[in-house]
Image (cartoon, rainbow, N blue to C red; front, side, top):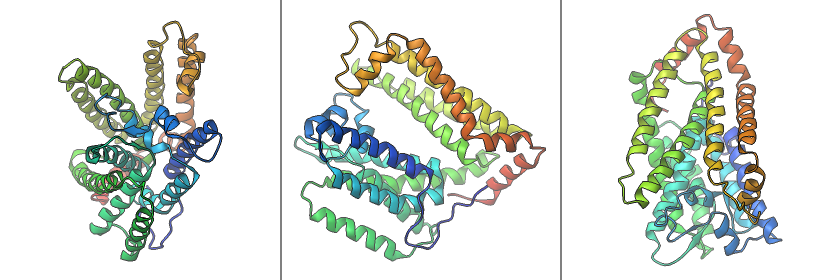
Length: 363
């Protein structure tokens, strides 16, 4: 198992999760710039594609809590946030792994938007990854306080100082999102450290990073399904707690089942194959859910989702099936090393996974 211990240097080379987030953010923001025909996107366009605004939560448009973080006002805004992601993200991902890095990033993005929304007393429109990147810095500060990060204090003094100076020079900075994201990142990191400490008694094995990332993504999909049902229940004056409780119980059961599977011979190969099937099922079920919106007349293609539905709606089963096959194949390809390692296991993999759990306490 790799050891995620940050080097004492000021800069850490980014890893897979950082590059993935950068790619999605640049593509999403770049698409808006192309639509606008320049290096900046107007407010109307940002609102259409997911900008966070004052009554979004009241209208149950929860998808904006994530979408806003991948959009940017202009090229300078995008560049500054991606620079912060590169400078800070490498340290955090190397220390906690890709799965926990993604969890911290998304928590900071979502709760930054929620706290920012609560602070605003007037209409507003917010976009940008500032809350999420501030969460990375908050998580790094948490690790430093816990004595689990090898960087000097001047790392935080310089980075926080430069960001405050930049923010003071820009009157359009949303302080609520920045501070909310920073606090959410710090708290999320502390909670994950407690979870890891509790896992010493609750789980037998230390999960491989690829398994953790896949479970995180599947958990996000399950949460979206539950959240959608909860939004409908809230809108109908219901409690909305049922789907969320079911998802939490199901996630705990899945984690424990995988833990038991990893502890047996060839368990890693079995788990990766099962995850490939789960990914395919998630894509297929999502396709069937989306097919319910394909009632004539179909969209005209005025926005990207409409353009996708124009292609998807005539053949929902075929496209969902092809997507499911692609998801399974991609999983098996990305996890080919884990499958090979699991197939060759005669007890050494399961033993090393158990030893890794016992060796480390917390993050």
